[in-house]
Amino acid sequence: MNAAELILKKALVASKLDSKEWNQVQAAFRNRAFFSSQVAQANIIQAMRGRVAEYAERGVDISEARKLMRADLDRAHYQPDPGKEGTIKDLYSKARLDVILKHNLRQARGMIQRARGMSPGAFAAFPAQEFKRTHKRQTERKDWPERWHKAGGKVYGGRMIALKTDPVWERLSVFGNPFPPFDWGSGMGVIGVDRKTAIELDLISDEKLREETAALRSAKPEAAKFNDNLQATVPNLRKDSLCGEILLRNFGDQVVIENSVVSWQGNLIQDVISGKRKKVQLGVGYNGRPLPLSHNFFKEHLSKHYGVNETNPNSIPLHDGDYELIPAMWHKPDKVSKSGDRDHLEFETFDGGILHLFVSQIKGIRSFYKTKSGRSLQ
Amino acid sequence: MTLKIHISRAVDVLPPDEELADMARSGIEELVKNHLLARNDSRPSRGTMPNSSYYAHAAETVSSSVNGNKAEVTINQRGVALHYYGGIVLPTNGRKALAIPKHPAVHDEKPSTFDPSRQILKLVWPKGKKAGTLRHKDSGEIYFLLVSKAKIPADPSVLPTESAMDEAATKAMESIL
Image (cartoon, rainbow over all chains, first blue to last red; front, top):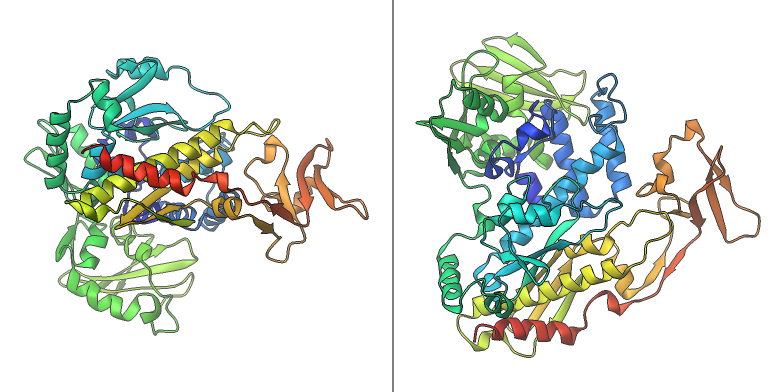
């Protein structure tokens, strides 16, 4: 999996949480979500994810990527909050766009390199890593040695080194991740430390290293775990508790809380489309009811409306990102009207289109397509 | 860019070959990453322009695979192949010149970022000269240098030598023996 693929696998989470609040969310959940602090519009999040993936995939230069993102924001008639123009809270500002583009890309690359470094062979040959400055910065944070020490790290001849499996990495990162970036805009990174050095520094014995390598052989590769159903336990968590409410409100259908166990639902839409899950259910929507979704519906639907399969000249071919907006339009449609016994939901997208979802209270989704803005089909 | 390398010690000579291949590729990857990071460290800063950490970003994109005695190293960073093999860069999309940022205010930017209707930039290209400039209309400071083409010489030192990569692969495999 490359960085662009990893970014596109992330579930869209539109939420008003700010960066400090996001940091309270468990890293394993946060890493599976594509979000931007205090951006609650799903179509903006969807456009951002696409642009970041393009930036990662095609090596579009950052100036061009910013330009494309600003064009997306123009199409959404985005306006920064009064008094916030040009600041990091302004999505249009260079500083904010750079955070969105660079941070997400570095994080995806960090996660991929971590996964590669934790394969049995790579771990056997390079079981430890050194924490060091890898990227130059105009103003460098000077407190990293102190933070390393506070996180429980040890220093060997002036070098900050620990086993890859040491919890110091998660404790060091403000995001709770064992890979770079370890802080917003941080230029610190890691380089591998080989087996011989790790044993000489007494970080691990040869015997223990062989044991840990054997354990990795039988474990599922880190990269494959990414979109697995992930469970996290929060003690005494109730749906109606403040923490439960925050998780459900911001992660929506992505999380389920049962018996104090918080479960991540993978990327619901991608999973049901691919057939990884035969049926999923979106939570209570605009009409106070849940919405069941089945793989069979999407299988047939894709054959008629996805990409080049679309034959209706009045419709715009659908793409992955359009399907992933179904939860957002189910919960907060831009417009709802009646069409016979069906509800007609409309939702504006970034590429100048309108998504149309027709829902029957008894049979669920009956139709889903996209037209150009301002044109409505029946 | 992707390089194909011959490894002198084939990884399928010892079981389990899949894991040995994994060690070999991690040895190559670490070497290439460290090489690019060292290159990043050694690059002088360009006057007042912020350092882009270009080679540090390249280091984050390194991946490799090994099969038998063949290895492939890929660096998914735009421009690395150009620096390695060399070449001539010409303007595209009908543009007449390449614009090279020369002022911190336009770091990571292109002239097209600036709204033409606001006329912030002024073109200065004396007749008969090979290069022009885009200057700030009020201060006169040079924001971009304009050239009709740029010749990038081949620089094989962008990457470690193939023999160094071969050695790194072998060393990583032998470390557990």
